[in-house]
Length: 182
Image (tube, rainbow, N blue to C red; front, side):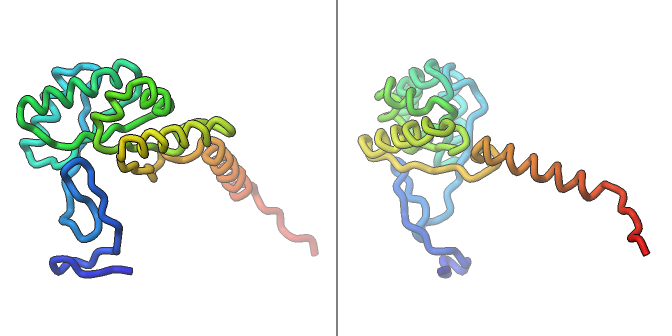
């Protein structure tokens, strides 16, 4: 179902609070950016988040890909708060997010939202446990979760299967066709 908001046709969605910002549910469109710093570098990441916020970004994503980055997140949040910059931080997790969120609870609490790519959560039996661990942490800290839907979010086994099928189809298409016997 869709509805008009400020003259623009938008699909219905449930509003979600990310820190002090509401997204979806008819709220105005929000500007989101992502840092390109090493999150473990507290000073440069804090500086870039502050610059993005001052430029109009209402939510900022940071990569949380290893222990050093997870340990830095609360310090980044604290440094931003000292500057009076309350832009919500979203943790972009890869592969070991379940470990980082449980081992670094201050990181889990400092982030306003978690972003997960299903293809980067784990494989086979481990995937369900690792994914559910991240969701349990989100519930504990009352944080929303965005499940990524892009190339990086594809399950690697599915991706390999589809690529193999595509290669076979291309190979069959290139084979010369013999004339039918009469």
